[in-house]
Image (cartoon, rainbow, N blue to C red; front, side, top):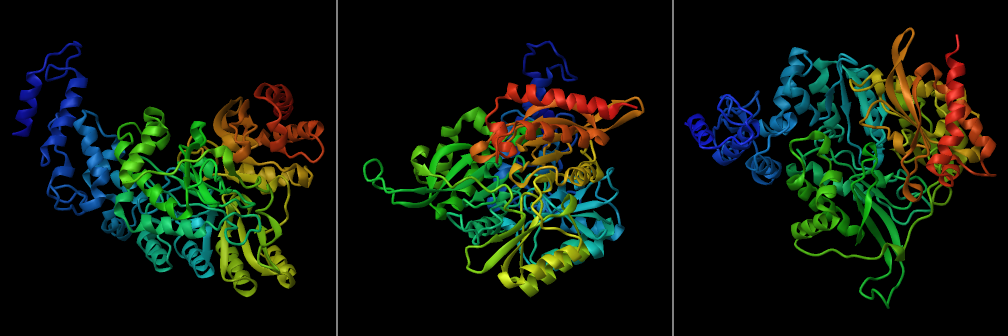
Amino acid sequence: MAQTMTQSVLASFPNPTGSQTNGGFSNSQKEYLDGFLRAMSGGAMPAANGHPHPGHSSKPADGLTTKPEGGAPYGGNEALGFKAQQAWQAAGKRLSKEEQIKFESNPLDAWDAIARQSALGKLPEGPDIFRFKFHGLFNVAPAQESLMCRLRIPGGVLNTAQLRAIAQCASDYAEGHADITTRANFQIRQIRPENMEGLLTDLHQSGIIPRGSGADNIRNVTGNPTAGIDPTEFIDVLPLCRKLHHAILHHREYYGLPRKFNIAFDGGNSIASLEDTNDIGFRAVRVEADSAGHPDIPAGIYFRCALGGITGHKDFARDTGLLLTPSETVEVALAMVRVFIAKGDRGNRKKARLKYVLDAEGFDSFISATEKELGHGLRRYPIGKCVFPKSSDRLAHVGIHPQRQTGLHWIGVTTPAARLTSGQMQGIADLADRYGRHEVRLTVWQNLILPHVAEENLDRVCEGLLALGLDYEADAVVAGLVACTGSEGCKFGQGATKKTSLAIAQSLRGSLPPDAAVNIHLTGCSHSCAQHFIGDIGLIATRVDTPEGTVGGFHLFIGGGFQDKRRIAVPVLESIPETSVTEVLQSVLQAFLAKREEGEDFTAFTARHGDQDLLELFQPVAHEALAGALKP
C-alpha cells in the first residue's frame, strides 16, 4: 500500500525542472517525498525504489534485536538520535550511508554479531565494519588484514593492573604491542578476527570499556596528564574527566551522534591538554573579586568554555563567553551534546561536525538552545577579566619534574613512534608498583608519565627504563614528535608516518639545544589525527610521483601553535618523498637556529613572524634541500 501511496503522491506533483525520473518527476522531488513518507509512516515503509527499509521492520536486522517502539531499534532516551534522523527525513533529506546503518539497527546491540564473527574467524564486512567501531573494533584492511581496538582511558590515567591487562591482551590476541594515541589513549593493533570477543571480554574484565571509542561517538575524554600533581595547576581536572566518561558509558543517548565528538579539560597545568582543538574545550581560569562590575560572581576558579575546534578543518575552538563552575561543566557538556544530536548534519559526513552547526546557526543560537535544554540560563563573564594560567612547558612531558607533593617527582618517558611492546608495558607496571603508586599516565604527546617517584628512587627508575629500551631524556626534537598510524596500519594513510618519525628521531636527535624545542607532527591523511596544522612543523602524507614510480611522501607546513599561541601552520613545500624528509627538516632547523633570538624556541620564533615572512625564510632552504636530496 505504501508503494502505491508514494506513486500516487508523486503523480500529483508538477515537474518544473524537466529532469525526469522513472516516475516522471525530478530527482529532488522524489528524494523529498521518499524521506517525508518514510518519516511519517512510523512502520514498514518501502523506499521509492521499491526496496524495504529494514529499520522499520519488526524483524531483527543482521542478527541485532529491535526495540518495541514503533518498530524502531531504539527506545527511551537512547532514541534521541533516531528522532533526529526521522526529522531529517521528514524535511526531505536523505541519510548518509552511515546514518542509514544506525537507522536500521542500533550498533550498541552488535555483541552477538561480534561473537558470531569471532567464532567464524572472519573480519567484519559490510555494515558490520561501521557497527563494530561502536565497540572499539576497526577493520583496518587493506593496510593490515586484521583489526585495531581503540580503548577508553579517561584523562589518560590508568592503574598498573589495567596496564598489565592491556599488555596481556596485546600478547594473547594481537602481535604483542600497543600504540599511544594523540588523545592520551591506547590502541591495540593487528588483532586476529577470531580474537575479537575474547579481547573485549578481557578488557571489560579489567575495567576498560572501549564502547564508543570509534564511529559517531564521544571519544576518549582528555585532560592534563599531571592533574592533581602539578605545582602550576589551577585545578585537578581528573575527577571531571572521569565523571564525564562514566556519564557517557551509562547513558545510551550519547551514542550515534552525527559524527565523532571530542571533549577536553585543561586545569592550567604545565602540560597542555590541547583543549582548544576539541569540539568542547574547558580551560580553567581564575576570577578575582569584582564588586563593581559583577558582584554576584565570587572570586575563585572557573572554566571558560570554547566550542568548535577541528584543526583538520583549520579551526580552533572559540570562546563562548560562558563562565562555569567546575561542578557545572559536565552537565553543560552533555546538554551541548544533546543539542548537537538534534541539529547536526545527517546527510553529509564532511559537514557533520559541531563546527558546521555553529557556522550555520551561530554561537548565540547554540548557547540559547543549550540553556533551553538545561532549563536555566548560563553565566557570562568578560574574558578580559579572567586570569589565565601561564603558558605550558614545552618539555614537561619528558624528563624528571618535581610534583606539588613534597619529595615526589614525575618522570616523562619517551616512546619510539609511540609504540610499547607487551614486555615494556609489563616492565613499566613493575616500576610503577615498586617505586610509584601503582599508576601510569598517558599524554596527548604520545608518551607516558610515571608519577609519585620519591627522590631516592629516581636513579633506580631511570635505570629500569633504560633497561626496557626506553628513554627519559628531554631532547628538543624527539620530545615533540607526534605521528598517527599512517599507511603502516590505517587504510586512509598515504605515507609511512611511524617509519618517518623514527627516521627523524634518529637523524635529528641532538640537533637543537634544549631551549629551542620544536613540535613536529606527522599525519597520514586529511583526517589529521596527528593535527599537523598546529605543529611547529607539520607534515601531511601524500603520494609523490618520481622517475621510479609513485611513492609515499609529505607536504610541509610551518608555524602552527595552540592556546595563547594558536595558529594554523603555513604551507611551505609540497610533495617531499619520505626518504628526503630528514634532509629538508635539517635545513629548516638550521635556518631557524641561524635567525632565532637567544633562548627562543620554535613557537616563539614563528609567533613573531607573519605568514609571508615564514615563506620567505623557509621555502628557499627547503627547496634547496629537497633538490639536493633528489640528485642522483
